[in-house]
Length: 317
Image 1 (cartoon, rainbow, N blue to C red):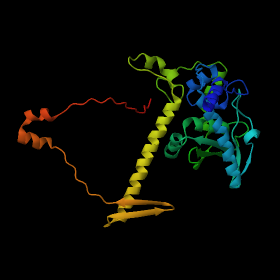
Image 2 (image 1 turned 90 degrees about the vertical axis):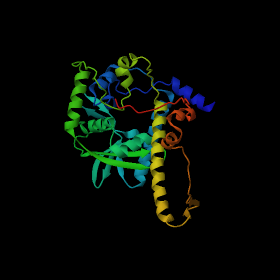
Image 3 (image 1 turned 90 degrees about the horizontal axis):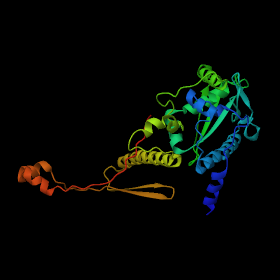
Image 4 (image 1 turned 180 degrees about the vertical axis):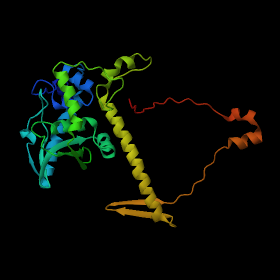
C-alpha cells in the first residue's frame, strides 16, 4: 500500500522544468538531432514514476558525495543549493555545474555521478559516457569557467558505495562544433535531419527516431521499458562479475589444495570447505553405437523434445 501510494504520487507529479524555460546544457547533445528534439519538444514521452524516483535519488547521492569529499579534506565552492549558473555560446544556453573543487592547490570543476552497476561497470571499463563528456565540456566552454583546466568527475556506485574518479581536461575543439550546432537550432537557422543510424548507443530517443523502420517490420513490437532493461543489464553484469570472481577464487583454492583432499579457507567469521571430488560420468558414444548396432537403430533411441526459450541479447544500433 505504501509503495503504491508513492508511485501514484510520482505518476501525477509533473517533471521539473528548466528554470530558464528553454534549452539547458543537459539538453544539448553530441547528436544535433537529439538537441533538435529537445529544443522543439518533439518526443513528449513522460518518465515513469520509478524513473522520477531515480532522478530524485541522484540529488541525495550528490549530497552524500559532497559530505564525503569535505570529510576527506577537499575545499569546494558553488555546491548544493549554491550552485553557480554558467552561460554557454552566444545565445546563451545556461547550465549549473555541480561545483568547484580545489585539488593540489588548483581549483577545477567538479561533477558528481551516482551510477547503477551497469553504468559503473561501463565507466570503469570504457571511461566516460559521451553524454557526460558533452555536458562537462560545455561547462568548461562557458564564459565563467573557460579559465579552468578541466573537470574532476567523481562516480559513486549506488549499491556498494564504491567510488571512482577521473580528470577530464578541457577540449574546446570538441565543444565548439556542438555549441555552434545548438546555436543554429535555437536561432531557427537549422532544420536538422535525423541521422541514418543512432549516434549515441544510450540515447533514450532511439525508439522515437527509428520507430517507423522498426514498426514496419512484421512480428516486431517496440516498447519503452527502462526499468526492465536496467534490471536485465544489472543481472547480466552481476552474473558475469560473479562468474569471473568465482573462477578466480577457485584457481587460488586449487593452488593451496595441492596434494590434500580437503582445504579449509578462513576469513573473519566465514569458513569455506574445499574438497577434492573424483567423479565418473557415462554417456552414449553415437559412433560406437552405430558401429555395433547399425545406423538404422540410432533413431529408435533418440527422443525429440521441444523447449520454449526466451533469448535476450543487447543490440548495438
